[in-house]
Amino acid sequence: MDILTPSIRLAALAEAESRKIGAKMTFCVIDLHGNLVLKHRMTGSILIGLEMAERKAYASAALQMKTADMSAKSAEGEPFHILMVAAGDKYWIDGGGVPFRVDGEIIAGFGVSGGTVAEDVAVAEAAINAYEAEETSGRQGAKS
Image (tube, rainbow, N blue to C red; front, side, top):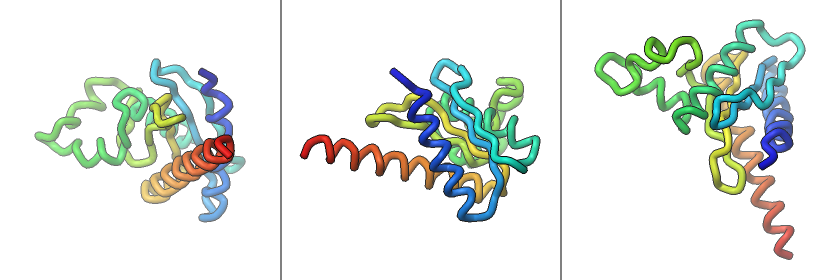
């Protein structure tokens, strides 16, 4: 399966969302084997965003869930309390990482960084929703 082409489209949608809120962000796609597929950095985005977007994408791909959900479960005594310590520096569980689905199947993790956590989450989810809406309308158009 071609993962790069949909990843490029997803990054373009995320950049458009980022521009709407006036943020300069970095976007990353990591496949389910932990391989970097795409890293897209907007001009002027902060340096740490490069690492954080990749780590959010990796965590989301590895566990196939939103990093915001991981973050909520990372307090002492919760299931992900030791995740970052046990997994080294590959995971980051602040919000902004989401599973990336194509044709309903998770193919990768998508990470967004460069804004506040709330902005990262909003841009990631808006881009994923826009991608899925385009995909759905494309399938419906093909049936006509």
